[in-house]
Length: 129
Image (cartoon, rainbow, N blue to C red; front, side):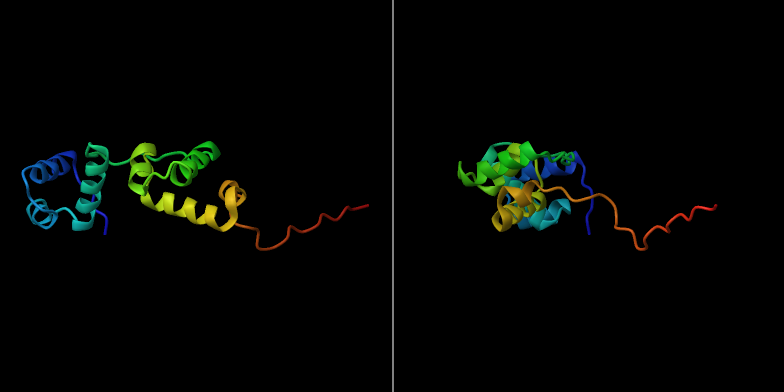
C-alpha cells in the first residue's frame, strides 16, 4: 500500500538520521516504511542531499533513455546515482536496462502503437446501384 508522506515527515526522518538514529528506529518514530527510509538514506549518502518531495513524472524521450543507458554502462555509475542524476524511478530504470540487455538500442527505443487492437474487422461498404 502506498501512502503519500509530507515534506515535514521526510525532513524529520532525515534529521533523526543525522542525529544518529538507525532506519528501524526512524520507521517506528515517524511511521514511514522501513524500505523507503533505507532507499532515501542510501540516496542521501551517495548524493549528499535528501529528497523530501515526491518525484515528478519524467517524460522519457529516446535521448534521455540513451543517456541513462550510457551512464550505466559506459560511465559505470550505480543505479542510485543514475536515479538521483536523472530523476527517474527505480522501476523505469530497471525496465529500460532489461530492454537494452535483451535487444539493444533497437528494442529500447522502439515505440508501441497506442490503444488496443480492434476485435472485429470493419464491415465493407456495399455500393448500391
